[in-house]
Length: 73
Image (cartoon, rainbow, N blue to C red; front, side, top):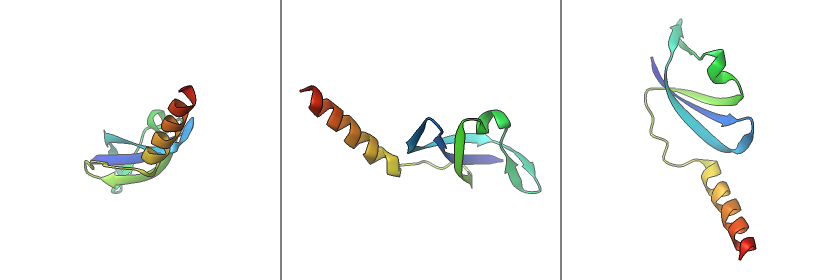
């Protein structure tokens, strides 16, 4: 089963990340390996290959970066 997983990295909770995986099934539900789940906060598991165009953290990261660059000037 092809799935797209949306998650936060436990070290960076300001940006939603995603991964495309082939997961085994258990009664129709995808099983994610413990190695994959380690260090992540899983937000959603979506059936199929989803192209994530924009997430809430994208703008936050840009604002932080712009502020840091402005301080260097």
